[in-house]
Image (cartoon, rainbow, N blue to C red):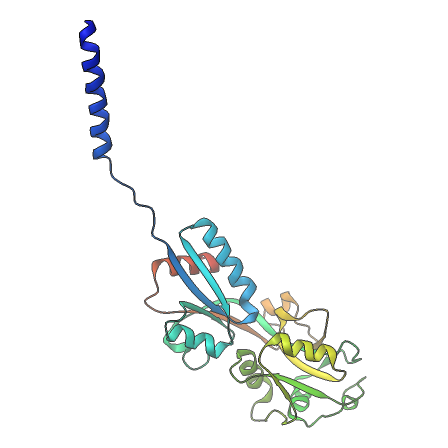
Length: 255
């Protein structure tokens, strides 16, 4: 090779590489996407874990989670303030959306830790919450006055409880009404003779959980429906849900 041809070959090679680079397709990074999910308190851990896991695998997708009672969660999706909602009851308005069962929860009947009563029947629950039984003395091993605590009307837990237990009976007018499970649980934990209900997922050692018809709301009894007050949690999404939302739902339910 003549010495004067070397610069020419180097220049020609560089031009060839530049030409290939110009012809190579440009890969655009995925556009950032934000998903907004509302959930009842009972589903908060499940939804948050699914959100974190999905975002870790899809860095361009951010999933924000907000806790709301069932009625307000449904309204948020309907108004466009949320993309999906985890609810504990299919209240009016839920029929507008796809309804995807995700897991099962249950209503835990809770009382003060010092209450000697270990369990109640469904009929005793109806009488306790209607005020027909106003002293624990009317239940085996019980003693003292009953103080009833319930959730507000836009709570899915309240809807399930009223439908399963109260039927056509009204809640006693002396009942204390609470806006969320945490405040109701705190009241029961601090009030001798108190009885209330919350999601089984939210019960802790600060309160005593009663058996219903001799069955406790243990995970296995919720999963197979053996516990009398078990029920499904649903994820509601619009029919026109985005591909990213549907991908998140599939990852969450394992579909």
